[in-house]
Image (cartoon, rainbow, N blue to C red; front, side, top):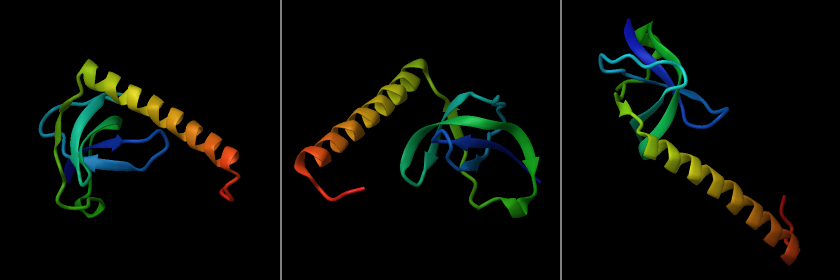
Length: 101
């Protein structure tokens, strides 16, 4: 059995398991973790709990730390910019008459 926390990076995205490294994280807490894409901020969706080793993709990466207020604000600003950029692209597709869905 291994102790893990479940972290999600997108609102309805997949939950990934990370090693809490002897710290306790509660549901809804923002944390900083290292992923294959680099350092990312995710939200704890399942607090510390134990699961069977067969359910884990090894090696299990550790949670680096809790996110700071500034990091959370940066993530929120980036999400807003994503929405603005998507809207801009949709407008350009219509303006240029591109055959896109």
